[in-house]
Every structure is written in structure tokens, then in C-alpha cells.
Image 1 (cartoon, rainbow, N blue to C red):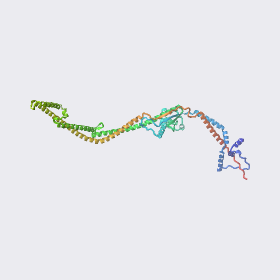
Image 2 (image 1 turned 180 degrees about the vertical axis):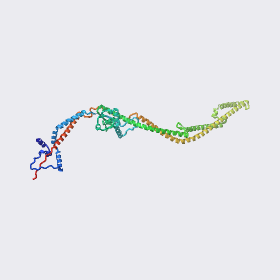
Image 3 (image 1 turned 180 degrees about the horizontal axis):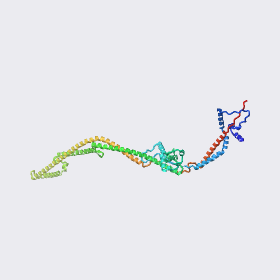
Image 4 (image 1 turned 30 degrees about the vertical axis):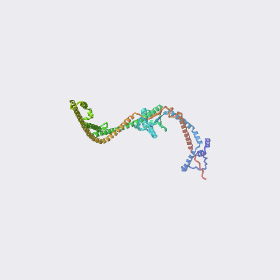
Length: 514
């Protein structure tokens, strides 16, 4: 034992040797008989400082001391290393494996352009696109999407997501009552699902990588596909809800607009009835009547002028009058032809017979009779022309009087038309707004029926080549061995320090006073 102590001291550093020499009781010299024994006294501040100094000097360890301690605890270190390896192997073999599958989703911030004037505006600038894509990414991991997945896959009845309640709990053993739980199986499954989903967005694109971890690779793939489907449905449902709310608001507003249009049109019709304003083909009847009367007055004036000109020509022509009326008269034409023939006979016979010859007398009598008939016919034609002129003047006077009457009514109607046009403009503007809102409401209502979200699954989830947790058995055993070695080293050093510290120094002998 002494040889071992000598070799241990020889391998120490000077400071460690001094500390060990002060603590080693066997290094103290024997006490002489004539030395006085110093009785132990109560510890003072100086003695406490000395003890702390000794501990401090002792802690100045060297590699030799550590080697001795590690050699003394070699068995403990090896045992702990083997135990750590065994525990690691047991953990790797007994822990339920977890499998993680990944899928890549392209979240395009711009929706499909189905109609030129869509309800939802397309993001133009890059900042808006990033915000839109970030919002959709947040929807991907939202509670609504996970709730759809829990309901579709019935995860509330899956023991992996909702662990069965134990028969005996700590609270029941302690005598406490837990009471009704506020966590339903659906909420528990939802919370468990949220912990098993990870998402990572690519900084240079709109691609999102989603990871799903469960105890089965097939279940992870099913959940991944279900999340993508639920994500699409949630976005489509959000757009449909927005379109539905907009359509409901438009329909409520349409009722007010329809009432306003009906009221405005009723005001127009009431104003027309009150002022006797009748319209046909978008024009007032009084205006149309005035236009027709003006045409009739012009025609009557023309007819009167023509009748007066014909009458004056007949009067001025007398027996030899030749007008359209005389030329159109068959009697006049026959009489004048007969008159010409008799005049020719008279002139021929006058060259043979004298003025008193019976033939000449007979012919003269016949000529005079024909001339009398011609004069009577002309008088008749002049009378007819006079009657025609009087009728034309009377018709012109009547039409002029009627036109004057209608013209005064037109002026009155034109004054009323100023207010009528104002009412019609108001009704037209309200009708245009109503028709615009009606078309938009129908378009928005149809917008609910189709999905314009642009979400594409560019990489589907496939079975992983190995489990994601725990790592391989060899890796876990290596980690357990390393942990056991580290724990053994710490324990061996701690035990060595504790053994050396527990060796109390022997009290020194005090010499007698001379």
C-alpha cells in the first residue's frame, strides 16, 4: 500500500503533491513526548479559510490523478457503457417506428382567369403575390383543413391520434374527481394531427414542402393526400362563401333598386297623365299631330294657289279660255270641234252664197248655238273652279286654325316635357344601375358553382425508404454506449474525488514552551 502511495505521489504535479501531502495523515511526523498537546478549539474564520484553501488546492487536479480514478472505476465505466448500449437497443426495438412522407405543393397566388371581370382581383405586384401565397400557406395548416381531414379519415377513432383512457389514473388513485372533460375525441385528434404536420416554404418559388409523420407509411400517405384535398376544398369553399355573401348583398340591394325603378317609372307615367302627354314611338302625339298638320297646311296652301290660278286663267280667257279644266272636259272638246267644223262650212259656203242665203243663215244659226253652248260650258267650268277655290281656301283656313290650336298645345307640352325629361333621365339612370346590379348578381351567383383556385400537387407522397424515428438500431446503440461511457467517466471521477476528500488529516503535535 505504501509503495502504491509512493508511485501515485511521484506522478503528481507539485501543487497536487503538496495538496495530497497536507491531506495524507501518514506523512505527518511522530509526536514527541515533551510536546504539549493543543486541544481542538472552535472553528474560526481563519480555520474556515484554511479549509477552503485546502479544497481549492486539492481541486487543482492533474492527469495522473484522473488516470488513477478512471482506472479504479474502469469496471463501472464498462458496465454503464454496456447498459447504455442495451438500453439503446431496447429503445430502438421497443419504440413504435414513425414514418415521414413529403409532398410538394405549388401554391399559385393567381387564380384561374375564368371571367374577365372576376369577383376576386388577381394579385399584381410581387408583394401582393407573396402575401397571397403566405395566406394560402397558413390555410394549409389551419384548423379547418385539419378538421376536414379528421372527419374524412375518422382519426377520432384512431388509437394513434386518440389514446384510450387508462382504467386507473393518478387523480382517481389520489381520490380526486376529474369531472367531464372538455376535450372531445375530435379535438384531441386535431391537436395530435397538428403536431405531426410540418411545412416548409421555398424562398425562391411558391412551392411548399409538407411532411406528415405517423406510425405507418400508408397512413402518412393517406393523410398527406387528404390534407391536399381538404386544402383545395377549403380554398374553394372560402371563394364560394365570399361569392355567396356578395350575391346575398346584391340581391338585398336589388330589391331596393327595383323599388326605386318602379317608383321612378310610375312618376313618369303619372306626370304624363296629369299633363295629357301621350307618346308614340318615343315622340309625343301632339308633336306628331303638329307635324302632320303642317304637312296638310302646306298641301292645302298649294291646292288653294293652284285653284286660284286656274280660276283666274278661266276668267281671263273667257270664251277662248284653254286650261286644264277645259281640256279635260269632253263636252267642251266636242263643242269646240263642232264649232270649228261649222265655221269651216260657213266660210266655204260664204264664198258661194250671199249673206242672206238660207244656207248661210242656217249655218250662222248653228254656229251661234254652238258658241252659246261653249259659253255655257265655260261658265259651268268657271263656276266649278270658283267652288274648288272656295273649298281650298276654306280647307286652308280650317287647317290653319287647327294648326294654331295644336301649336299652342305643343308649346304647353314642350314646357311640360322639360320636367318629363328630367323624370325620364332619373328613371333611366336607376334602370341602368338596376340592370347592372342584376347582371352582376347573376354572374356572382354562377361564380359559386366553379372552382378557380390554382393549387397543384407537383410531388405526391411516396413510401419512405426507412423510418424517420427512432434511428437505426446501430446508431441508437452507439448513442447509448457513448452516453454510458460519459456517465461512467463522470461517475468514476466523482467517486475518486469523494474518496480522496474523505481522508481526514491527523491533528499535528504542538511543541512545549521552552
